[in-house]
Amino acid sequence: MNLKSISAGFLSVLLFGCSKEETLVKNNNNMSAAVGSTTMGSLGRIGSTTDVSRSTTGGTLLMGGGTDVDAAMRWMITKAGGGDIVVLRATGTDGYNSYIFGLQTCNSVETILINSRTIANDPGVEAKIRAAEAVFIAGGNQANYVSFWKDTRVEDALNFLRNTKGCVIGGTSAGCMIQGRDYYIAQNGSVLSAAAMNNPYNVDMTLGRNDFLNNPYLSNVITDTHFDNPDRRGRLVSFMARISRDNGVAPSGVGVDEATAVCIEDNGSSRIFGTGLAFFLRQNGSVPETCVSGSRLDWFRSRQAVRCYRVAGTANGTNTFNFVNWTGTGGVSQFYFVDRGAFGVN
Image (cartoon, rainbow, N blue to C red; front, top):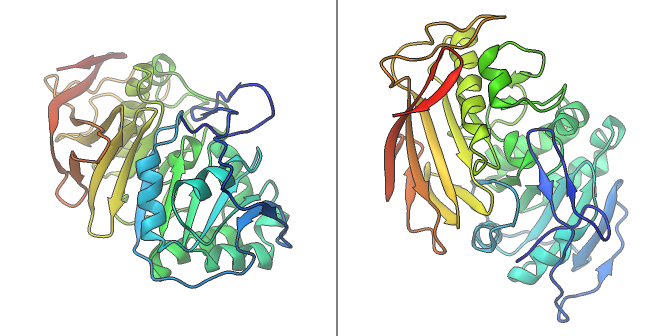
């Protein structure tokens, strides 16, 4: 297994609806030694000290947290043309450097710790991201990413990288939670499904919309991670209910288990890698019957409020999902609903 370090010698569980990262790092005696970097916030770089320019293909990597999926990371490196990979985070260490560099040939991997708006607005940090062939956003607390990175040079650079330069942006756990154009901020702390369904406007239901990352195919889409925890399902439906009621759109949701990744191609097709499941949710017809502050959520619609397509990950990404027509292969269809504050599956 390839587990990343956020502190030395112990496991840390982060509770902001997002992220659990582990501290063990794969050893590889053939890796290049880490080299210094003059980039503000850099935790070090491994590989070549000189950037290269490589042909890239765009894409989005949604990873559910826990153990990283080697096949999905190799997919990212391949689409980066083996160029320069930049890892972004707001807490933690450089554990991803040796892991990514040891998976498959690439020119370099560098981790930048961006834990202030000063660093996020540094021209050198912006230039480093724009020059990369792929960016991977580590787990942690997505509230930090929104607080430190939104409306800064980092945000501009990420959207340039994905939509103008045509590169992959990926993320795990909290780094996945911010990939949708609708996103859960966890600004006041993590929300549990029971609380979300009991009052979809409670203080922990902090949502952002269309003002951060502009990933293709993720318009009106909100993501959730660590989805092998069944509690996440009711809250994702609650997020969608809020989007439906507040914004007048038919929302979609993507839930990803730990040790699982959804790799979205530039044409909207995707493959599911790993050992868990990915869940693709879409509003099935009408808005919630009841979605108001202080009342239990009721999104029943004859037990068919939200259509869900559940797909198992595999080692080679055999099973697929298409974000253009919202259909997949190798999966199972079901419906989710909320009956007066209680989650149900049909």
